Length: 371
Image (cartoon, rainbow, N blue to C red; front, side, top):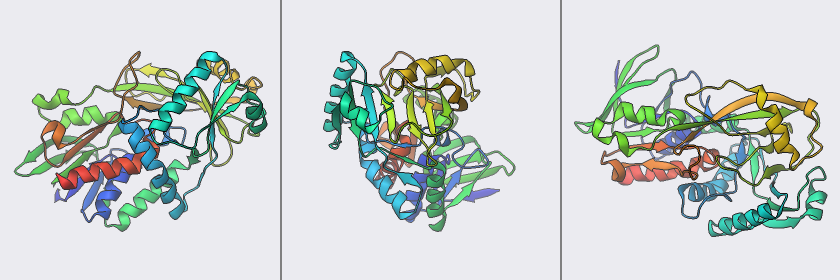
């Protein structure tokens, strides 16, 4: 089969769906190509489902800008589409003087990013809010929340399809040639191999972003994109009644935000993720990490019952920096970065990608339609 459309988005995770929706609602005929048989089956559905406030990221970074701008846009969308969500709030807990200093730095940096609703509370007030949580000082973020990520993605997809968008599942992109005679040309595999061309193209393939980039661009552009690293995180569920009514986080650690306690929409508590650097995509659960989890959890929840901690699932964060390096930013490569008109490639879209998805989409669509 040979097909032509205005725009193609490769990848039906939360960011790909948000970008495709924004394109379709702008009147651009858009097709999503997804390698799997369902939407959002990898990073988008294997995370903490947290709506982040934007408190951790360097001022001026893409993570800070898209998270802070995207948070309220996301809440508005969820309310309008009746997607299950809740502004439950979050506590970042410090247990010693060094961590208290770290909280003060987080507060200062968050203010520079435009987050103005944070409050430092002492150990006594912390105990009143969450009696099971132990700490000397905590940072309260009232605008942090939780969302049913799958229902969010279904709502994005419904909006996309109502704007005449088309999604093709089981359609991995095998090869491509960009900007040949004014169009991008792709060949898909799967059950129905198809040659498809377009004038606008977005690589939103998450864990496969660098592989897709290498498959699409010429040799001279290969190194314009960042490298790809994988950080696997384990999540343990906590059976029985929830000991907290808010999310509870330790002070961040290198590579992630530390083993934290989150809630799902059913009120179930889960702990995670940890950080385990891996060489390839592998979702196997390593139950031997349980003792490390228990040590981390006891720092802020000393009464944790080890018998209630049960293996949950793993997720993998697509990283643009490796172990021991400073945290990386979102990388959005459009024509001004690589010289290819009508092409944007997204790399390192990890947390807070779920929160930032609609803001990222706005940025990408603007770059494509105003170039």
